[in-house]
Length: 225
Image 1 (tube, rainbow, N blue to C red):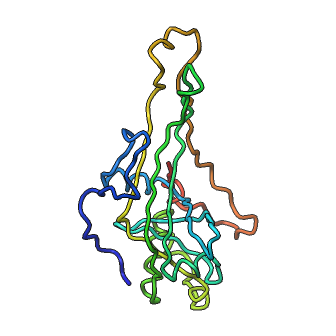
Image 2: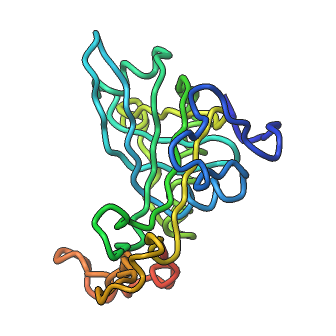
Image 3: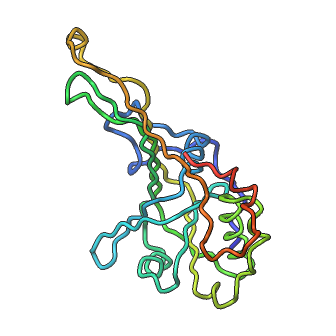
């Protein structure tokens, strides 16, 4: 499978499972916003059920057009179950701030979140797997894939890559200041937003790094959020 072509419509259409009923004003279904939220993250949570037992597994992910990907060990219980075609719930969320209102009831958080439902598919074939892994590597550190030792066949055999086509998607976003009851604005209580950001630290050399190897320029391009 080479899932790099998108034939989906411009915007997602809410379904019975993805229609936002609670705080529907926060619902977002345009594809550009959904992609921006997904591309701003590195970790997702994949929910699924095995023999009636629910599980939620955190893992790294990446996006190519209208598909999201994640990978892991071929021996993974989650991956072996999901590759059989069971439905999954794929979620990504970003915490952007604490919203402190004049009452506890109206206090909240600013966030961006995406939930996608559907059956994941296994990426098969050596060329397709290597292409998917290259996209993952280049997304994080552009230019690094060409520097790395080639993936060994045994390493590829020990790896499972899954993808989920983004078709049934729900997205919610909250931003801005608190929304208090009108009469509460007269209270002498501080209200506002405490912004929260993920910060990328300075790269740290491996203690076993060979002498004279400088930090590559692409490390300075690494951004998340």
